[in-house]
Length: 134
Image 1 (cartoon, rainbow, N blue to C red):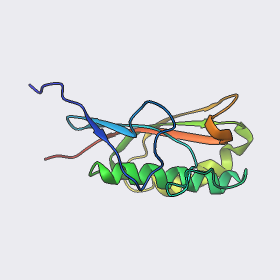
Image 2 (cartoon, rainbow, N blue to C red; image 1 turned 135 degrees about the horizontal axis):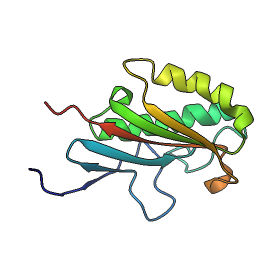
Image 3 (cartoon, rainbow, N blue to C red; image 1 turned 45 degrees about the horizontal axis):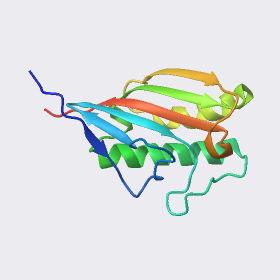
């Protein structure tokens, strides 16, 4: 039986949190990644200037950086949630998302439209990964 000993994950390759939370928390083999918005990790500024495709690529790159820091990758992601300001962006986001999660089993997913996101972002994605530690 495992003991509850969460470990905060932090990498400079992803944006610093904009609030009092960790980029991710690792508990046993489970990695809970906080939502990422399209911030450039080196400047902390929003990228894409409203271009949903550019924002989506940045969000995915930020998630990949957090996963990598924890010793994981997109192939170990089992669940994602996508938050969009406009569901009309769904098809463009879905095309980029599909390229990211094309290896192995596609994660379970929810996608919801929201009224607003931090810093004026158009998209945010969070995920849960089960790390293979055999």
